[in-house]
Length: 261
Length: 290
Image 1: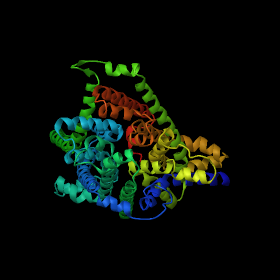
Image 2: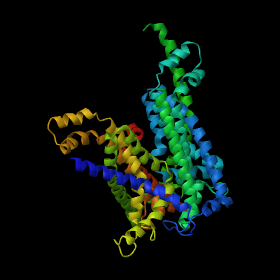
Image 3: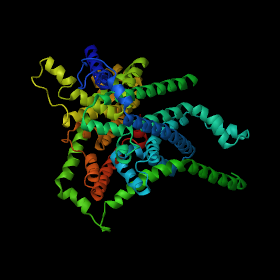
Image 4: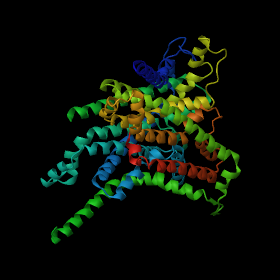
């Protein structure tokens, strides 16, 4: 019994190591002084970070990616919160099926989504535009926001809205003064997930972004096909740091929610 | 209910319904315009050629070996990845669900962190680790386990390793969500009635964790079917997946009819799998169990 438990834990420990190592390994690689990717690096330097920061192409791609991620996360959060609120109000079968429709961006294989968006954009002239990138990422971010906000609304007692409205406050103000403050942690979680999803999105960007408006991930993908340049390690480290930061924020946010409850 | 109250309440209901639709409209417009409409368009394109109706694009599945072999390889990959993810993920979720609060939080953090790291970054990391002079090969050679570096990447093996790595959280999270809800009293009752730990696990815990198993397997399987970045970067041209067939047909051959029919068939497979799974666990729970 004790032995099997120990073995089980050792196995789980190995799986967790296997999960974490590939993400951690990139960090020392990015500080390597060598052109090739040896481990441990023969010497240390910041040259790949300098190479990244000094490259106008990488900088432009970073600006595009950050703009798209911020803008699409905000829009997806507003639209998604409204949608989740509406879904929680209604109980009809029709509305339930609409919820499934809004979850579809997570279900449809991403290549098919990319081809579909490409098809639409080619016809309305949104290919290789900022607007096009933002809209596509709003669509992909909606399921995260809706799922997260629905969880928050499930814990919210709608009777409070009744009280507020019976005291003469209108619907809109009731939402902003009574409801929103209580579901705020789940709205923020949705926002953060939508942000990360947009920042990391690659496949749709491969199809629809181009020219001046290439995303960071599209440039990385193209660069990776040609050669394994250590500059990518530097960018990957930065991207991972952003992910780490966001996960921490989500965790702190969740703790704050529990603390208040 | 008094007759007089019916009309105002009906008006109220109608106002409520209008509000619900108004709030849903922007999100539905985005998903409708960028996903539903193009999917319909793809379906339409898949049966059209030179302005007429045709089944030629689907006939290729029977006549062109590349088509069905790609689907076969993709399904094979999905089965392998799902099985591997279940074998690795079940123990992780099991230990996390049974551990103290602090440990289970730690384990979940280790699972969630890679989950929110870019797929591209993780594919790149595996490229570094598995390449000819990469970390794994260096370690194996120095330990004297192999004479010459192994070919670990640019083949199916590398693709499977990276895909399992990327999709493991989709297995662990639903499993954990289900296991966490299994009351410990049930397994305790099993033990107190004289069951051995293995017996109690097999007869009590495992069956109760099945919804999580199904949700995790469906998610991993379906996501593997549509995987694009990892096979493209780590497959070295040897792992040809359906998603690559779609993109090649557009980027290289500009064959929209072919790309559309492949997309429709792939999508049909995905929906069919979700439909099958919905007999065991409702769709909302598969998607929400994270």
